Image (cartoon, rainbow, N blue to C red; front, side, top):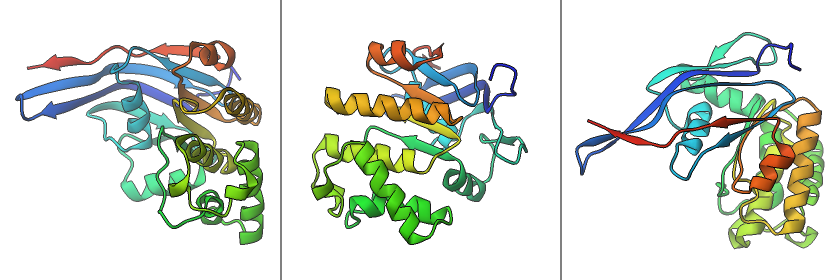
Length: 235
């Protein structure tokens, strides 16, 4: 793993936000650089408000960085800069190779848990039967009770919705997996299941960039830690 070129290389990443009511700019990220390799778990470490989630959102391109490069090496080995990649290509890459687990499940309200997990697999080209089979397996591995699989997650508890969120990401078998406090709303038994899924993704070669609220998770899972400094105001 150490001799392979990085799956992800973040170089000089900068992101600022303007607070119009105060007439000030907040520097969320100021020149952050690090790498993630295939088969490696890298944890982002820093206090609340340091900009850790902003890092993930810049990579996912929810946010467009103000400066710096986010070089990603896809399966075809043709390096892409996610910081400047056109939006249609970002969307296509999310379908093929990326997954992002936030602290909240975002899904159409009428879809069942099974459909929420199976839909990305269908977009990858899997037949419906195979997509649903893999989705059921992922939901079971995440600890969602079978009786809930055909119900919409809008009716679930926070922990149950997060199980669906995690199942959707792991079922897609992404090459790069972004995790933003994935176990924050889970009980100890469910947290152990997620730890096992993360390690299984690592074993199959996924690169994983994660924020964990639990120091134990960092100790048990992370191969390396990247420190993210706190935000600051700029004139």
